[in-house]
Image (tube, rainbow, N blue to C red; front, side, top):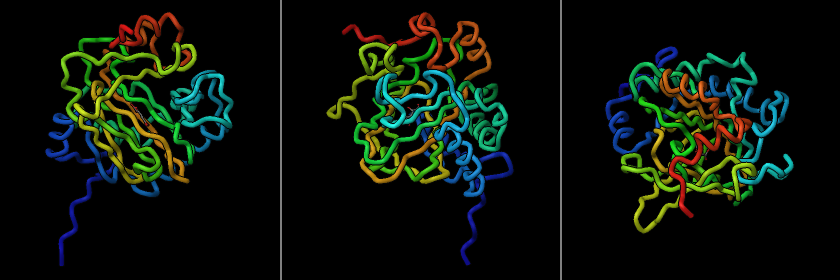
Length: 278
Ligand SMILES: O=C(O)CCC(=O)C(=O)O
């Protein structure tokens, strides 16, 4: 009889293999399978749904459409975006996914990382415009001496090319300078999002479909985004980003919290690192 492969889950911990660590270093992202068991995922999904249906209230632009402008009404959203669910529902802090994610972040990036921010994303079905533009996360963030990042993207639904799975430009995290970014809309007062260009003739584009309960982890410089939702199913994800305790302290000192309600001055000071000249 074939021997069962050893479980990757050991209590709160998920064991990352040396091949996966190497893939993260090489590509700037990695796909980890089966990080949450079905019953564990169901608990996360329950809270995610309470946010999306507004049973847990979220103020201002922290509940918005990631593809449209801030003026859009909820019914018209293409990508429902909830920033900082842990802030608005503190009981959620320290949950099982968070603990397991912390073990993954440590194995990929070493000790001393903490949760910097979290985010829920829900692409509505049949929305070709539910495109998450190409970007590098670092374009949004301040520079600090310790830039280590592990951003975990947990699939609440099976995430496929049809419903707009994550896509990456592998190796782009090693580029010497950030690519030029520009606001998705006219200015960031209309929508927080920044975008950059990807050239299919030069850049390898890798679609990364993953199953419910799987995770992708990416670093702060890899170029990534996702396509529209051509399917009749939603594409929900819960994102948890880990950065060094010193970096987080410096961000907070400068008033940068990853909230879309952060002041315009803070966004001007910290935002658009790879500023486009156009
Ligand atoms: O959910 C997506 O399609 C994109 C998410 C993303 O860019 C991120 O988590 O950094």
